[in-house]
Length: 127
Image (cartoon, rainbow, N blue to C red; front, top):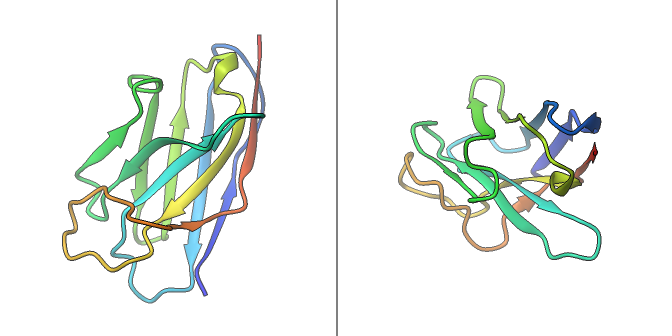
């Protein structure tokens, strides 16, 4: 049973920073792309960032490019999202995701259909 546990959310002023963490467990192999999504009140869940198993490739939504950085530590089975220059529009529940289906390439950022999800962590940016 795959478990993804997010932490690091909270309340921050606009222009500030937060670092989210997501610890994965339940699978013997960590050879899976991982990523972050977010969902603001009344809106659809949207993609934020993804990272390949190797860590060599990353992918970002245009709205966060240059401000957010995704990284991972495979020894700790943990993925991070460093969020800088936060804006009020970044306020949302942030969800960690891990690819469900086995992938051959260690350099792919594709999360595939129906990834595993964490329970989410709230990020609130006050203006």
